[in-house]
Image (cartoon, rainbow, N blue to C red; front, side):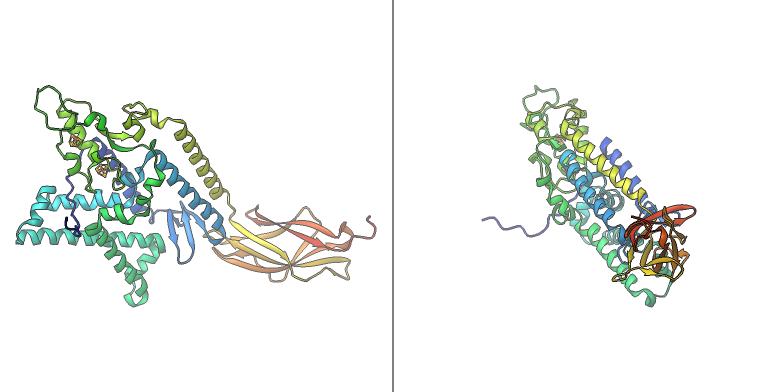
Length: 460
Ligand code: SF4
Ligand code: SF4
């Protein structure tokens, strides 16, 4: 009986290179740059992105969201989920290979440093298996020191997304005792990132990440993914130059396996471990070019195309242009547009106006009648808002019990007020009333309530 393998087989990935890798590098480094600068860039005093779960404050492109905007956030989350499902159904694991921070950091930062210090995969293997010499200690020491420093940098950035750069700066400059929690968080995050990029690596994608494990549910035969065209490639085998072609196009050079960062053989069919990194496409294309054979033995294909249910085409336009893709893309655009509209059309001020519970009207000696209300106003911006209240369209006045003229940034203000109307203007027992919250000459919020009073006897 074969002995059960318990030890992890370390993946030594060959240095990738080629057209697709260059494209992926372009996208990856652009996203990396965005990730690094986003907490520092300010729009109207707010960062580009902030996810302050401690204070329940979220900022998207300078727009502040408070707990009162929960519905927008929930909608945003739903859209994100739908996007992931639809995108995966159509384009496979494109997120993993091109935009996931794990892949970007692993393949474009940490592994590049490893190549630089320890050389390509065979040299790395030799170094690990070789005797413990000074050069080995020096290379390993240098690599892990740089890994730790970058993990420390990522940890700080990560924290900047949660507490903002100002909060992070305080942790960095104040004595440790004043921000012990923050200090511990930085240390823990640093160790976690170091552990992920120095040791866990592809295990995060193949075993830990729930999205990776969902692939089989989200994808179907029409999903475009990276696949090996076995009809063209098999039977695989070495081929002598100039000899009559008696085998498939795959010369079994194993280069596609050697470059794979998750250590799989794409020729074994669609596998959950594939993160669509395109490294095997580049490797195989280079081989096909040398053999003067058409490229794309490994390429972007759907299972239907590979199995011949749909005719293959070089640029996959047939597959991508099918009705399902168009319908999904339209749905994504619509959902994103609705989310954008919700985000940018939401009011700066929110409020509720309620007639005081159990109260009724008061008839006053001067011939007026009043109702008592409690008012709550929320300033959802990061700046103070001077404001006033105005009754819209009714002959009524407002008498504040606790007058307030400025709504402090990001706070909720409670107020009590009377609505007063000349009794002779009252036409019905219950009148619908609108009160405008005015700021800078504009109505920033309209509140609705009812006013009760006995109708003027002169009226029907
Ligand atoms: S790189 Fe291409 S030719 Fe070489 S083994 Fe892989 S599929 Fe076959
Ligand atoms: S099979 Fe190819 S695309 Fe998939 S992870 Fe390996 S190298 Fe990347």
